[in-house]
Length: 141
Image (cartoon, rainbow, N blue to C red; front, side):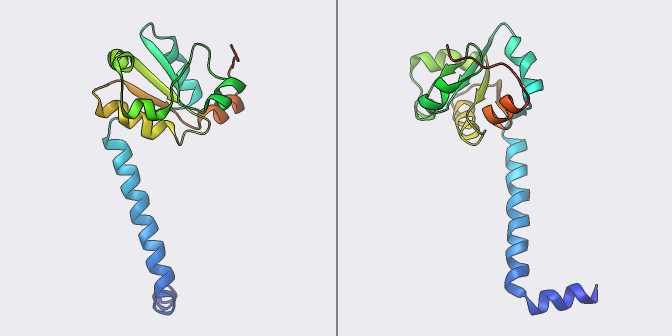
């Protein structure tokens, strides 16, 4: 314990930076849990996809989407979800599963859907990278 106190005293900037990172991580996790967004592994996403009222929305760039996507997924740009049109508003009462290349773009897009009133929204954790890594099927059609 004495060594820790001595280290913090000698490296206040480093210790302060570490403390700030820990606070940001805790804040991010609390916000993620409280906003109602579900994060599903690819295996958890399969039953979700098979539900009769489920819609898979791929917010990847069209070039990435055309390289391979989940069967029956719709390619909708994240910018279109931020300012939803009539077609997107019709989807808000469905089970919506969002996916992108890595999972990073799908989360803000899902938050946009939650803000417009969608209540059943989930994101594939790890995106298409994890989907492929777990050897789930993809299509280019």
